[in-house]
Image (cartoon, rainbow, N blue to C red):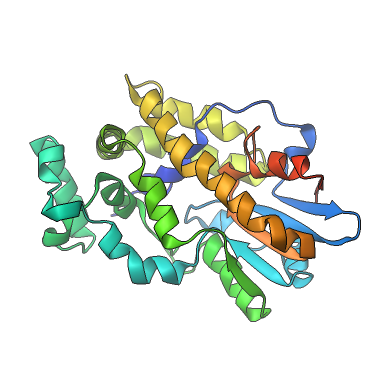
Length: 292
């Protein structure tokens, strides 16, 4: 049976970076982005966890979508499904086994094979790709779509223009730039410390429900920083997967936001803190107002 801890693995790893104290009005899920002479846009912090409590579209979110012309998301899922496989493999015929301790590799192979990943594929996976496959899920246990899928469905039903904020090769490059030692350490941690990860899932969901995205830092620290050496590896993940990608997504939003009526739906950890999207938009001269 698939553990819910793996579904939240990347979310919890990334959320654990040190954050500056947030402005009081950043305790929210949905913000209006406004500037004189431009129709308002909205930013919504999503959560990449398959749980029914965080899978519905609240009325304020649906209302904001109905007033939008463009739906901006991190990446279009079809691009990942169609093209990711070749980028997930080690270069030049290299193998995963020599990078891991034998008992770790055996455990990983058993778990991924149980999820339907062919052994010849497992043998050549990059460590970050193996970790992602441990946690990848799009459906709730009931078979219903998660929050990200529901947002895409709602955008398509409303015939919104779909704007990916990063391309597949850019997202792959972000993972590839994580030092190999950190990739291996994070993968091993996900395999060996399932209980620590599981213990953070429920408080993470509750913090998201409150709109208190900054609290995710404290929650995640219990799962990683208590283990020797893990803080430095999580810092590498944060730098490459959150901070650098936030800068790219902010850049991609520059022109669309000047036209207005954009609904931005990205992971909550990209929004808060001094390097988060809300702070970057404030620097651009936008007024950020909590809606819900």
